Image (tube, rainbow over all chains, first blue to last red):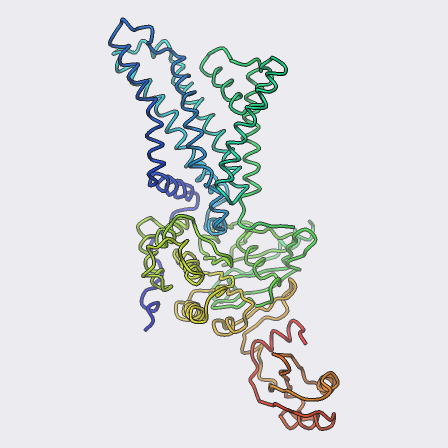
Length: 279
Length: 329
């Protein structure tokens, strides 16, 4: 008797209602990335600045003679700015292949033949990168705030800077959304994750280079909206109640960021399909 | 737009035990200037149904439209009694799709991939993994289930696609060219699996193929497509029909002239390979005085002055139906 006569049987168990597949995609993506030793090393390394800042908070809380190094609201802003480097690396490492690899392996038609919508697929993929970016930005920043309270033994700093809690969350979410959707859109345009990574890095450096050239020509920072990272820095400064570093009005920078996210979603809407129609 | 609205108000039959599992009513799909489906109306009953046609006939387009990947410009479709335009998710939960091209989730071994597909279809993680092992054994990949799919041969990739389509126990399977790229042994095994699913496991399936023997071996009914239209449909046995006899014939002499004679006598000729042709002699010729056996062919050859070098009785095959339906000569 052939083996297939022995094994196939009808399924009598329950099935989940449609709408939960994005969690399956996100969970599988997170597990796949964490299993990569190099990526795990990168994520751990991304927490080194957190340790340095934690030591700073501990020392200044316990030794008043070096109180000039005590953390301020700006310390948390600086921490998030330092983490931008790791966000860049993590975005390329974890994000470049999210859709590109599926396109290379024709996996989209497998995904979309299951009871999940395109938006669920995108949400699942976005959740993977979103989670990793927040893990190297929002999570350590909030932990630092918690450590400050613990090491100081009082809520005074937190009470004086209560805005830091929502500021860290909003700034991190904005950064995570921008890089996640930009990277996903780029990933949907190609079948090569390597090419996508280069493209993402190119966009970051190219927009910054254009801004620097314009700055050299005009001598004004009014054209900082040309730089992707410049726009984010400008808006995050405002979120942390600091003086914006560029002459560009911060709403302009915010509009550029929101516009980019909208453009990325529009690209995803066009590119994530079960069938590629060439007319 | 009015035409679409008019169609959408029409009642389509539900998928009862007797009703069709798939019903298309005047479906048109357009890609730019190319009309891939031209007002297709068809009913796919229960069991194993073949969707037959040459490359570019619109078979894959039809399957993709039924999956909701492509929106028709006109017409209406139901799968398992559910309107494709209204509740595609409900349909996909009950449907398994084996795509034509290589498709897998990168970086996974076979059991992870199939289990993952099960979870995407709504199975709990534990059930999905158990089903993954079962269907991988069923499709003959039990021993290779922990290997990365990217290391699989073409035949194994075809099997894994079948496994992911089966893992959630669908009520209906869409198999798009399932034997593509397989060696003869693998092809036979795949056809055996499909036949087993359709006939012993009571899974409704639609097998899209341009390979006539595949459809003939695995299916009971067939829908023949050509140039975006349905050109024949019905039970294979009925389409092959008892209404005539088929002969393999090779002659020496004026071939075009003799073909003309055969056509005028009411016989149908299709070429097979090189100089051998298949001649269909309808039963009705028995009453017309020409006859419906080999003697009629000998008589016509003698009248026309050609030599019969090879004459062998054959049986009508799906190929004859196909050739007749798409108008091959």
